[in-house]
Image (cartoon, rainbow, N blue to C red; front, side):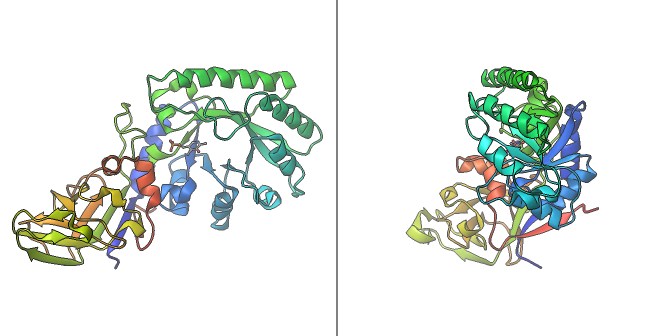
Amino acid sequence: MSSVEAIVDLDAYRHNLSAVGAIAHGSQLMAVVKADGYGHGIVPIARAAQEAGASWLGVATPDEAMTLRAHGVTGPILCWLATPDTSWDEVVDAGIEVTASSTEQLAEIAGCGADSRPRVQLKVDTGLTRNGAYGSHWSELVDAAAREQGRGRIEVTGVWSHLACADQPKSAVTATQETAFARALEVVHDAGFEPGLRHLANSAATLVHPTTHLDMVRVGIAAYGINPAPRLRHDADLRPVMTLRARLAHVKRVSAGQGVSYGHTWRAERETTLGLVPIGYAEGIHRSGTNAFRLGFGGSQVRQVGTICMDQFVVDLGDLEAQRGDWIHLFGNGDHGEPLANTWAETVGTIGYEVVTRLGGRIVRVYRGDA
Ligand SMILES: *Cc1c(COP(=O)(O)O)cnc(C)c1O
């Protein structure tokens, strides 16, 4: 029995992934499970994704893809962040598809000495200006890919890009990127080979930009039950997957005027009950949420008070009945009065993505709804 738990509801994950996938029913569905399944656990999430109908899994680094294979996860996997230390031969022989964003990466992959022919997807930068071949480097990459494919050293299985502003439905950037992507595909056509899978959409684009669905959609955050932007409007019924809860480690009644935690940044206005929560910034609880977070306790909303410490923080329980060992809910689906992960995130000026991926330290993951 642990006292700090991230409960991961795999039924909710499967529900969300199918609901989002249904919006792009004409396209293949990739479940994005990078960063340890957005902090939910890469292997259980990958299995749940496949059960829910994802035909592809997507990760950032080749190492993450190798972790999936090491745990017996089969089926198509694409990785896209080619770190300079990658052993391409191992990755290719594990049946993982890799992404080339430059001619250098393509040459490394083509010459890696794997037993099987590398299956490579080409990434074009259409305006995110992060990874991907930019400007004239795209036609150089396409020409190099045509040559390597002609020599039988690689097989091109996809062409793709990533959107910068898909969670802002009014932004003109998405349409500009779609046009740039269409042009990038013409370059492939002119070089005389088939692009394979063409894909562009993340969760937000899958939800609100149907013209970006193409051959496949890459769904991350929405499947974890977190709206890509807190006020993004769409038709999918998203259910929070993760609930973070802890058991009170200490409960005490203090007098009016008592200062709480380092620096006495909060002082009790009247006699009150304080609860000690055994989790802190070492576990990923942003210290900047000091005196601002709201939590759920037995259906009521309560305030975090006093400076958040490395391993612990204090909540003001007022006159609520409380005992050592009672569960307090930090974020989740609201059943116990707790906020959504996105609301928790907004309290500290960040996004739900950062909240769930940052959790670490002593937090134990507990799975519900396992197959
Ligand atoms: C993380 C990522 C995704 C998924 O994005 P969400 O907003 O979480 O859906 C899709 N594609 C790429 C390339 C990514 O890096």
